[in-house]
Amino acid sequence: MEKRIYLDNAATTYVSGEVLNEMLPCYNTIFGNSSSLHTFGRDAMSIVDRAKDRIAKAINAEKPYEIYFTSGGTEANNWALKGLARANKEKGNHIITSQIEHDSVLESCKTLEKEGFEITYLPVDSKGLVSITDLIHYIKKETILVSIMAVNNELGTIQNIKTISNIVHENNIIFHTDAVQAMGALNIDVQDMEIDAMSMSAHKIYGPKGIGALYVKNGIKIESLIDGGNQERGKRGGTTNVPAIAGFGKAMEIATRDLVINQQKLKAIRNYFLDKVFEKIPFVQLNGHPQQKIQGTVNLSFELIEGESILMLLDLAGIAVSTGSACTSGSTKPSHVLKAIGLSDEFAQGSIRFSFGKSISKEEVDYVIEKLVEVVSKLREISPLTKAGRAKK
Ligand SMILES: *Cc1c(COP(=O)(O)O)cnc(C)c1O
Image 1 (cartoon, rainbow, N blue to C red):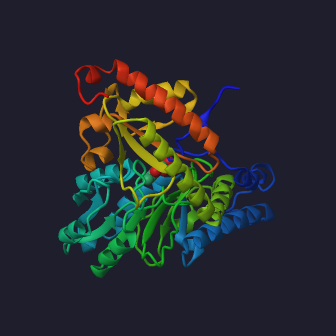
Image 2: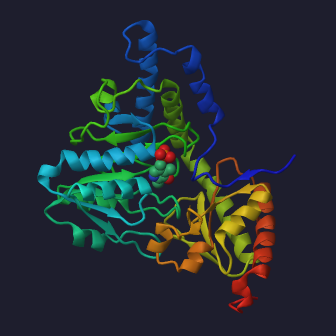
Image 3: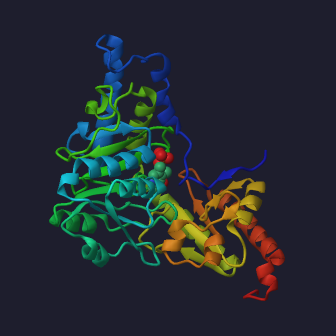
């Protein structure tokens, strides 16, 4: 059998067996509409309620009804930014976010700018951390909302969420965080971390695609997202996707249950991988924070060659990775995240994200290293940059 190794778990994960088992009966046995009053409906509703309980417990939300299901992280982020801004605009029109947020936050901010909101995009340091001094500096009396992601999807860098939320609340401002990459990697306690609103997604934690949630603390004002139904307390109408919700609830429960053991395993894998890479490949740089990061995500820049070429050749060897630089319509534009941490275009173009999943084995990592060494040296041999005589050894 041909080898296939998946190292793109920050993009999406497979659905775990335990999750799938939870979902399957909801397609043909417990198939009722959760809004119906009969037994079929009530059975479906109890599945939805159980999922809400599980998610609330996983993030220590005070009440299960603070969890609102959405189609995923993108929708949750859109709703959080626009819904919180619009519902609180009588208090001011200023929002603070960071330059390294997911596009769903950044593009929502662009929409809000057109509506008259003023947005401050905080810079980050070379490791991807938002500076607390900068945050304090930019808060003003018109500031109504601060949205800073818990964990960056390209670098794995973890922000100082508790410190940030403390400062935000001292100034009576609402705090939202995109925690999509934090689930299963970090202990998230919305009460202890003083989070007012938080975006989550199932398919990054071995759950199904197309389902996520926005946590909104009781008492925080947010506009409705979808009119025309009593689902999600009337704020996000539409017949509930019971199988996906069941799967999401189970995935969250497992992510919390197995957090420590998964992270221990990933830490060992990541350290082993990095040691081998630095031992065998010259001119490599680790991007992001070396310590304050989640274990599964590793972003490396390979000098003198293009990330896209590495990706393509690794794919031929059956290994799936991701480039740090998104390829937009033929032209390779470095990612906004790598730019924000100050990487030169050359380093940004040579960047690859390896995101390890919980079932990775040491043998697989050995194979990846073997292939990576081959691919990098092959590409460097033919690189015009190498020919120009820069730093080749
Ligand atoms: C994947 C991701 C999203 C989007 O979530 P979807 O469920 O795919 O819409 C948002 N933010 C971060 C940080 C992500 O990694």
